[in-house]
Figure 1 (cartoon, rainbow, N blue to C red):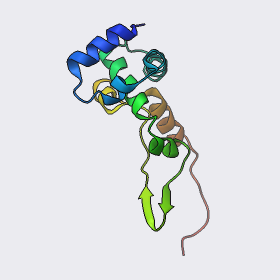
Figure 2 (cartoon, rainbow, N blue to C red):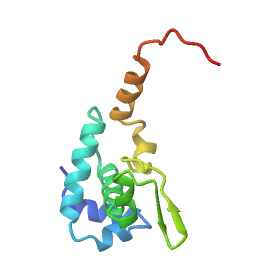
Figure 3 (spheres, rainbow, N blue to C red):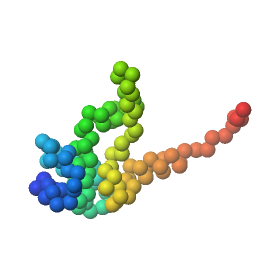
Length: 125
Protein backbone atom coordinates (compact mmCIF):
# COMPACT_ATOMS: atom_id res chain seq x y z
CA UNK A 1 0.00 0.00 0.00
CA UNK A 2 1.38 3.43 -0.90
CA UNK A 3 2.19 5.89 1.83
CA UNK A 4 0.62 9.30 2.32
CA UNK A 5 3.95 10.87 1.34
CA UNK A 6 3.98 9.00 -1.98
CA UNK A 7 0.40 9.99 -2.76
CA UNK A 8 1.08 13.57 -1.66
CA UNK A 9 4.09 13.76 -4.00
CA UNK A 10 2.07 12.33 -6.91
CA UNK A 11 -0.75 14.82 -6.36
CA UNK A 12 1.67 17.75 -6.06
CA UNK A 13 3.28 16.82 -9.38
CA UNK A 14 0.15 15.86 -11.34
CA UNK A 15 -3.11 17.38 -10.06
CA UNK A 16 -4.06 21.00 -10.60
CA UNK A 17 -7.28 21.00 -8.53
CA UNK A 18 -5.95 19.55 -5.26
CA UNK A 19 -7.79 21.83 -2.84
CA UNK A 20 -9.65 19.00 -1.09
CA UNK A 21 -6.37 17.13 -0.57
CA UNK A 22 -4.43 20.21 0.52
CA UNK A 23 -7.01 21.16 3.17
CA UNK A 24 -7.57 17.60 4.44
CA UNK A 25 -6.69 16.77 8.01
CA UNK A 26 -7.07 13.01 7.59
CA UNK A 27 -5.01 12.29 4.49
CA UNK A 28 -3.85 8.95 5.86
CA UNK A 29 -7.44 7.81 6.30
CA UNK A 30 -8.34 9.01 2.79
CA UNK A 31 -5.51 6.90 1.34
CA UNK A 32 -6.60 3.84 3.32
CA UNK A 33 -10.25 4.28 2.33
CA UNK A 34 -9.41 4.86 -1.34
CA UNK A 35 -7.15 1.80 -1.43
CA UNK A 36 -9.73 -0.38 0.30
CA UNK A 37 -12.57 0.72 -1.97
CA UNK A 38 -10.61 0.43 -5.20
CA UNK A 39 -9.25 -3.02 -4.32
CA UNK A 40 -12.84 -4.14 -3.70
CA UNK A 41 -14.21 -2.56 -6.89
CA UNK A 42 -11.28 -3.56 -9.13
CA UNK A 43 -10.00 -6.81 -7.59
CA UNK A 44 -7.93 -7.87 -10.63
CA UNK A 45 -6.14 -4.55 -11.11
CA UNK A 46 -2.79 -3.65 -9.60
CA UNK A 47 -3.45 -0.22 -8.13
CA UNK A 48 -0.99 2.61 -8.75
CA UNK A 49 -0.37 5.88 -6.93
CA UNK A 50 -2.37 7.59 -9.69
CA UNK A 51 -5.50 5.50 -9.08
CA UNK A 52 -5.32 5.93 -5.32
CA UNK A 53 -4.59 9.66 -5.54
CA UNK A 54 -7.60 10.36 -7.76
CA UNK A 55 -9.88 8.25 -5.57
CA UNK A 56 -8.57 9.81 -2.33
CA UNK A 57 -9.29 13.30 -3.66
CA UNK A 58 -12.76 12.14 -4.75
CA UNK A 59 -13.42 10.71 -1.28
CA UNK A 60 -12.28 13.96 0.36
CA UNK A 61 -14.44 16.05 -1.97
CA UNK A 62 -17.37 13.89 -0.86
CA UNK A 63 -17.10 15.36 2.63
CA UNK A 64 -18.80 18.51 1.33
CA UNK A 65 -22.09 18.93 3.26
CA UNK A 66 -24.11 19.10 0.04
CA UNK A 67 -22.68 15.76 -1.07
CA UNK A 68 -23.52 14.21 2.28
CA UNK A 69 -27.18 14.89 1.48
CA UNK A 70 -26.80 12.88 -1.72
CA UNK A 71 -25.35 9.92 0.17
CA UNK A 72 -28.42 9.98 2.42
CA UNK A 73 -30.74 9.87 -0.58
CA UNK A 74 -31.92 13.49 -0.47
CA UNK A 75 -33.15 14.53 -3.92
CA UNK A 76 -33.79 18.23 -3.24
CA UNK A 77 -33.65 20.86 -0.51
CA UNK A 78 -35.89 23.93 -0.38
CA UNK A 79 -35.17 26.97 1.78
CA UNK A 80 -37.28 30.13 1.62
CA UNK A 81 -38.44 29.35 -1.89
CA UNK A 82 -34.98 28.48 -3.23
CA UNK A 83 -34.54 24.87 -4.32
CA UNK A 84 -31.39 22.85 -4.83
CA UNK A 85 -31.72 19.57 -6.73
CA UNK A 86 -29.08 16.89 -6.28
CA UNK A 87 -28.09 14.35 -8.87
CA UNK A 88 -26.50 11.12 -7.75
CA UNK A 89 -22.72 11.10 -7.47
CA UNK A 90 -20.68 8.09 -8.49
CA UNK A 91 -18.71 6.24 -5.82
CA UNK A 92 -15.79 5.94 -8.22
CA UNK A 93 -13.74 8.98 -9.18
CA UNK A 94 -14.28 9.94 -12.83
CA UNK A 95 -10.53 9.81 -13.55
CA UNK A 96 -10.31 6.31 -12.07
CA UNK A 97 -13.30 5.20 -14.13
CA UNK A 98 -11.61 6.56 -17.26
CA UNK A 99 -8.44 4.62 -16.48
CA UNK A 100 -9.89 1.34 -15.19
CA UNK A 101 -13.37 1.13 -16.70
CA UNK A 102 -16.59 -0.02 -15.07
CA UNK A 103 -16.22 -1.17 -11.43
CA UNK A 104 -17.16 -4.70 -10.37
CA UNK A 105 -20.21 -3.65 -8.35
CA UNK A 106 -21.81 -2.06 -11.44
CA UNK A 107 -21.13 -5.17 -13.53
CA UNK A 108 -22.74 -7.34 -10.83
CA UNK A 109 -25.79 -5.03 -10.65
CA UNK A 110 -26.23 -5.24 -14.42
CA UNK A 111 -25.99 -9.06 -14.37
CA UNK A 112 -28.58 -9.24 -11.59
CA UNK A 113 -30.97 -7.05 -13.59
CA UNK A 114 -30.54 -9.24 -16.67
CA UNK A 115 -31.24 -12.43 -14.70
CA UNK A 116 -34.70 -11.33 -13.58
CA UNK A 117 -37.35 -13.70 -14.95
CA UNK A 118 -39.67 -12.62 -17.77
CA UNK A 119 -43.08 -11.41 -16.72
CA UNK A 120 -46.14 -12.86 -18.42
CA UNK A 121 -49.82 -12.06 -18.27
CA UNK A 122 -51.80 -8.88 -18.04
CA UNK A 123 -52.68 -6.49 -20.77
CA UNK A 124 -51.86 -2.89 -21.45
CA UNK A 125 -54.91 -0.69 -21.63
